[in-house]
Length: 545
Image (cartoon, rainbow, N blue to C red; front, top):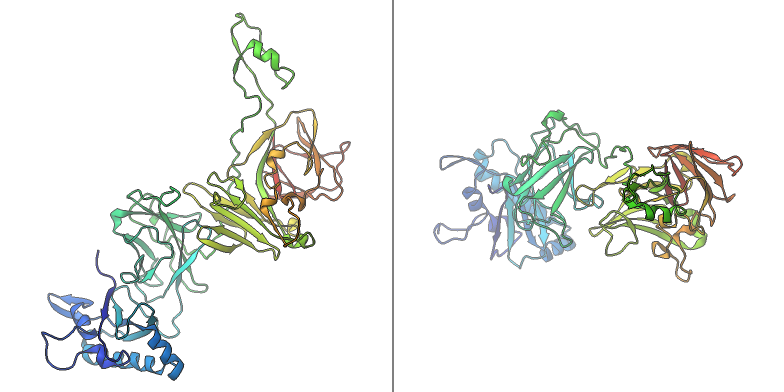
């Protein structure tokens, strides 16, 4: 791989604020002197023809011992740092003026904690760029391991052609927080100006896969060598490039987007502002959960013994007593399609400070802990945070998260008619479901046994309260002991209100708001069509026919 960043440490510099002491050693002892900055620039030209340099680098970053920089800021308000940068730029212009090709010489001086007294680090190269005063950012680059917590890596400026992102600041332009691939490889961004799309490449190409996720708006980079993290998941890094607001960027045709498995990454298709609201897909029906009486081939004697437990269709007459008969079970079932994240500020008088809902590796709800790979925390100021091993970050709906390869968690925006009670809907990728028998009326609520397995938040583990407040179930926030009753019928479900204070909302198959359910009694129930949803407390229940 070419050297994109030249990095050297100059030792035994008598005065780190002296441009001459850093630029060139005095005297003519060419074979015994230490190489200083001028020698390094001569030995690593930007362009050359044969052995003759035709162009040199013009942007240089210097790192001085942090204590020296701090003392200068305290005593002279940074005057010696400014004089050093100006003095080196003048020497650079004087000695290499014919090799600059019209480029402006720029120097930037910073402090470094790991440098000893008398040491100076210098960095220059193809992927080292110093912005001009007042130059606006064109892109902002951020990375994530789980698509929930994003950490900013660096800005990219319009005239910054190459940016190398990796693990070691000595060999890359910027270090990616949480870089999972060790010292191996890097990500190269190629910016040919506002009239060309930004390209993303991995170096070396045979070590990584880089694919563009159109729906999520980021690149997924994976190692081709099969590395895994501490939890056993394949190593990956998500890269998001967000155009700055108001900055014109070129859009490339969608035909230029390569497949995800292609080793050669594609240019960014179209500029996507951050954060990118992911389109809401059609809800995917959960696979049928095993009922208490699975439909299997059984001998006739077993069927006759179970007839009173589950209504069964009358089997056809059999000519041989040992023949097996298929036992159909009730098709009606209720699934927990999503969780409604409440406005916790409505319940301050209860002492509730935070509600934390975790998703384990099976993407099933669990209390936040070691088994949670992605959690959502709501505080009493009604702010939603995504929490992972990488940290926590405030999020808003709509949004989409991919904590694991092939898994997607959607945070859906709430309808205005429900915004006084809820902040968002957390769609569950694996919706648990339970069968219900037709022809009978059942109660759902905090104190009802029916569908109790779907009340996954019925525990004080999810709720953090003020000190001195007795532990309480999270279901006490918005769910009555007897919330509503339901009965499966041929044309859907008949819903009746069981508590005058229970808020009930009707959502369609796509989790879109339909109506707030008002008066509904067993004599005059509210009809819920098959496949539609009912919101009560934290629970968004889908009633399937």
